[in-house]
Length: 151
Image 1 (cartoon, one colour):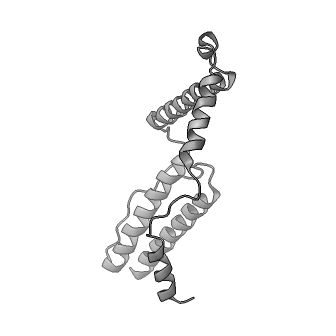
Image 2 (cartoon, rainbow, N blue to C red):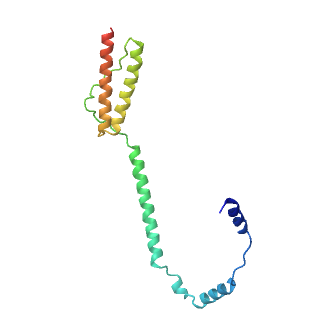
Image 3 (tube, rainbow, N blue to C red):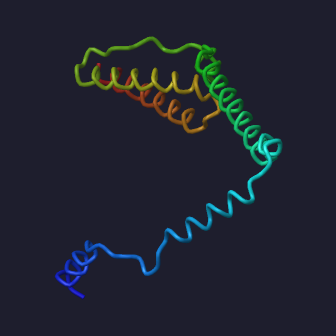
């Protein structure tokens, strides 16, 4: 089947169709049966157990949602305490070498070290952040040695 045949078939679907049998007769019969088997008034006021159970589940889910939202809000309002960082009790003061090429690298490494320290305060048990901080400090040490060798 190509696209033209498909489009022709789609156009043919726009034509109105009459049902093969009269639907109103079955609708009238169903309404008549419903009137004959109508529930007495005192039973109609009682709600089935499934409706009661659905209402209880809706209330419980709403309470759980509110509890979750309150817990998240309370957690975000807490001020994180500064956790001691291993081997970082005395952070080196920012150091600026006299050589402008080394000064740019020193600024970048210092900024990276400070960002890593902030990240470690939020996730103190992260070994990857600890490794990155150790590498950054090692690079800062190497940069200071290069500055001392350069004069």
